[in-house]
Length: 499
Image (cartoon, rainbow, N blue to C red; front, side, top):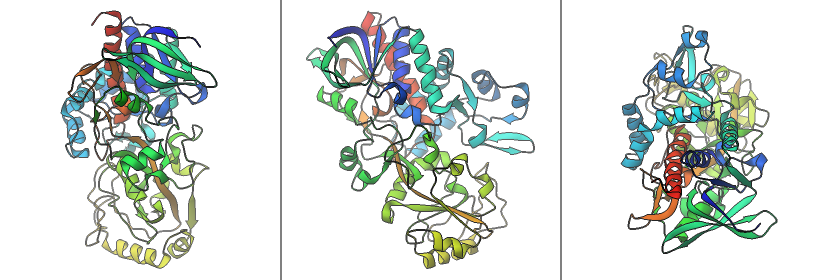
């Protein structure tokens, strides 16, 4: 193709990128979106998620206003609770060990609900997460963990809805087109050098560029360089295209690195999952019912407190813990008391599992595990459980063990009633936490002196500063939406002279 021009170029085509594109178009700018993948694999990591989005809400009415398809009967049997700004602040502080950038955190939280309504106005449909974030008690669904809402159709449904709106708004999406470098000089950024699959490179000149093309988690060399030895062995949960290109282009143009470059979102993932995500399976390679069971390593030993907190607040760091175990693997073990409660992802065809009627039979089937040590571990664990405390999956119930090297502090059920099941997991990396520094008010990329680089904006997973060591579930899509909208609005207004 020949060189071309537009007001705004958005690099990436996932949730953050499309929110940026739609808000830039809303500001009156012409917009071109660049997607390295083909149309069937579009959407970056967003397409591989369950579509769950963490937002502030102050009661049932806020959720009902977002979820227009709820019936009167569904509303009657639902207790959504609340998730106030203070609760969101508390979670972000606690989960990131109070390292989260306070200005970015404030923007994320205070703009979350308004951004959800803006997305709804753009055609995104939402529904409560009945299947995975609520248990039915006395005929009512009670939600837990502050995460209540998902996009219809999960991540793929979210991506499709945003792309459908982009098409209606006249936004051009160029597929199989990789951004190679920023066109920049002392006066700022003026466009992007790109290359279409099988074609020649060319320039797209633009007044503003928004980078929203993900972190570096798909790049094994970068993972090893920044996350550390062994991370080249991790599976990648999502797209193969998040190679760190946007970060590299911005750094070459003078951007400031920011955030937790040695940290990432990493979960327990099926041991035999492919190297990269599979859209046909989506996020179902994850195995997130571990709070109700035990995680056992090759030495036959537990290595974390499985019940330290709700799954939403531990799953993004426990993948690292699994990677650190011998052979980068662990088995999740459950007995018949819990098996009916396992999440849907345990029932897919592509799963690595064993079943047995006795615990001794199970021990013999756990490939790579010291069977005798495993049986000792189970015996010691069962003896340490405080069985007089009632098991309650909707709250941190305090049903715990006492006296173990690593106590389980909630949901400690004995493993003693057959049949038994175990699921083999490894580490699945979702996205990297380190990235670029931006101005939280307008999404402009900053240089080492904290001065804005003219014409350059960023949003999504390549922005650093929000997450450190861990992550509250559902916050990634919310952050992408909030900062995508912020960056797109500013980029569009700057491009058409309405700033």
